[in-house]
Length: 280
Image 1 (cartoon, rainbow, N blue to C red):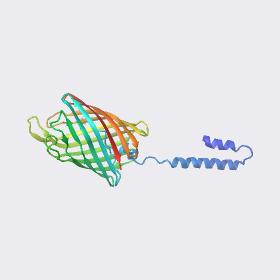
Image 2 (image 1 turned 180 degrees about the horizontal axis):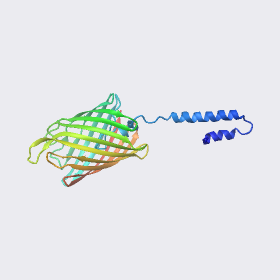
Image 3 (image 1 turned 90 degrees about the vertical axis):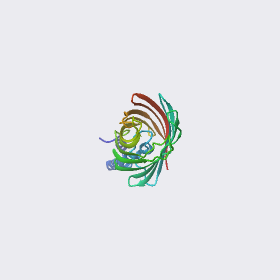
Image 4 (image 1 turned 120 degrees about the vertical axis):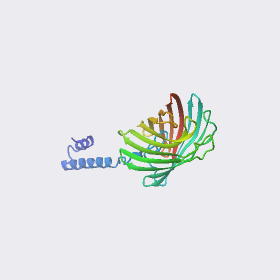
């Protein structure tokens, strides 16, 4: 069946115009429409969504997208956490990312200052170094590994007191033209205080799943669930539900807002946060 545009050209040809000319015009209309469709490229990667796809924040899980070679992405924020014992504020929440090429990026975890009634002293937290390898980059699937090594650089009362290593497996898939699903499975080798009071190393696992929905070309909503197997040696785990919005103010600037509710050993806490991401 001819399209509307083809039909319009056929009707214009009734009367004095020859049938061969009508056919030529119809063929030209079809060719132009075909070329117009072909000129609109389909996304070659989940990471073609710009900063909304590339940023790790504000979710706890990580993105599968590595920063483009020779580019820089900075992630920053502020977060206020409240529980029965009091509240504390994290300011900075820095995560600095540098594209190395071939799906690799180098990361700096920090700076971040923490202060409040639930910690002994205020100060700059431990800094870390990281590396991301994006091993899968397809229109509907993505995959990456993150390795982050935190070092005891902060002063007593703020530092963990020992190195901490995190290895993440990040997976993502598209759920149609607007929605997506991300999964991060983290293994954390760290240290803490056992019930006896002695410091011990322990291994914790942290799987997370995030559902995203692109409400408009610039506004994205997300909902995430995160489980932590244990919070200290011999201690129970924690579960967090968080959600929020990301807004692409410009191609190089993202703004976001987040809220979460957590439960650990029957103790509830919640946090609110604001942040932004910038690309250079």
